[in-house]
Length: 107
Image 1 (cartoon, rainbow, N blue to C red):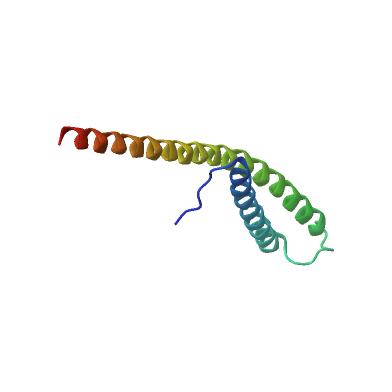
Image 2 (image 1 turned 135 degrees about the horizontal axis):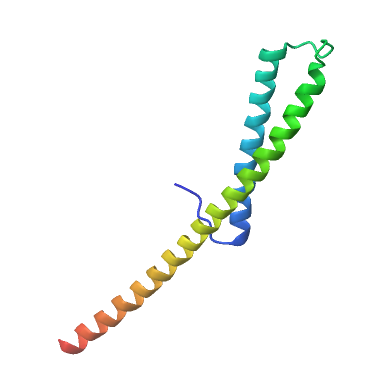
């Protein structure tokens, strides 16, 4: 069952979780690809250590910012949906009570 996003804090928690996963995977993939492309020796003539550090920092910033922005927006939409659903259930319960009362009066 998916977590309900009801409060603003829930939306922020949802956003932080998605951002953390995205940043972690980006670091892992960038590091792996740098090792494959440049080798694992950080003192190589190409200065692989500098290239690796730069790639990781840039990828973390990009993925963190993009994921946070997009995830936060979708989390707010899901929060709005959960609030709307709760309001509809409340209205539905009120209508059922009115219908039952009307039926009792007619009987």
